[in-house]
Amino acid sequence: MGDRLKVHALGLEFQNPVLVASGTFGYGDEYWEVMPFSRFGALVTKTITANPREGNPPPRIVETDSGMLNSIGLANVGLEKFLEEKLPWIAGHAGNSRVIVNVAGFSTEEFVQVAAAVGGRPEVDAIEVNLGCPNVKAGYIHFGADPESIRRVIAGIRQNIKVPLVAKLTPNVTDIAALAEAAVDAGADCLSLINTLPGMKIDIKRRRPVLAMGFGGLSGPAVRPVGVACVYKVFQQLVRMQAPVPIIGIGGITSAADALEYVMAGASLVQVGTHNFVHPQAAGLVIDELEEYCNSQNIRITDLVGCAHER
Image (cartoon, rainbow, N blue to C red; front, side, top):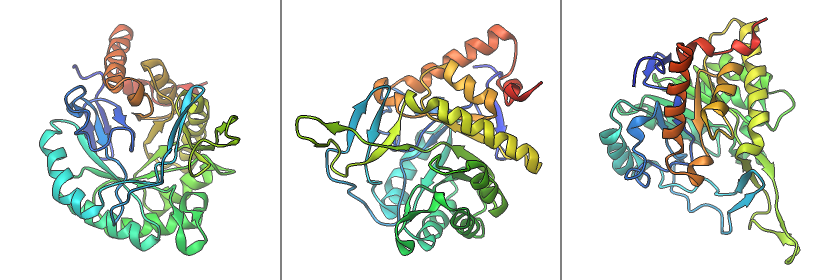
């Protein structure tokens, strides 16, 4: 692979702009034989919480038109096992791929606890904060739905880590640009968007929701237009703020063409998520297609960031 796909962001060099989204690639080990994550710009791990979680009862995944609904419930091995077993394995297989650990908590204190522990490890290149968790102490209002909650979480983590900090934002708000501004003001070095949209599928024979928890997070191609619009809007806000903070675009990417929409809207990096379940080599194919595109156009991928805003 040449230099056309290299991206400098977060004070790091990424060998290409293609990452895999948290929760869609596990810890990399299950995919390793068919899709080594050492090819990617970065592996974004499954969300880590302080304690192990079994997650929600099944069924917790269901296919929908142009996507899927999931209600996994942040099932994960917990902080201790991740640091002792998963992280060393990931670091040993990463090659030139960056390692980004997605963290979550059910209180500001838990967010800070997990992020500080993970951020203190030399194997970790950056932390992505999953702001879609409910704040148990505040009546289960999602942290990502409130600018002040975002400020508290991001500022608390920022004071306790030195590695780059990525805030993952939800689209389920009135103004995502206001959330972006809050995250950047509090110390986020990067923004990733979007997280899933709420949805439901009903079994008309049973006359009940398919998912055990009723609602789930909608992802896949169906959400791509929403994701592209959010990236476009947040990019404009960052320009107004004169804040050169990179954006990671997420939502429904299945091909280089999809990824390029995000890049042209303002994303420096992209994450392939749900399509990993359809095709385990999806992210690798997007990388190959992007390289072919850039070679055919005789450009670097960074030349295209935000070009849809030009007049």
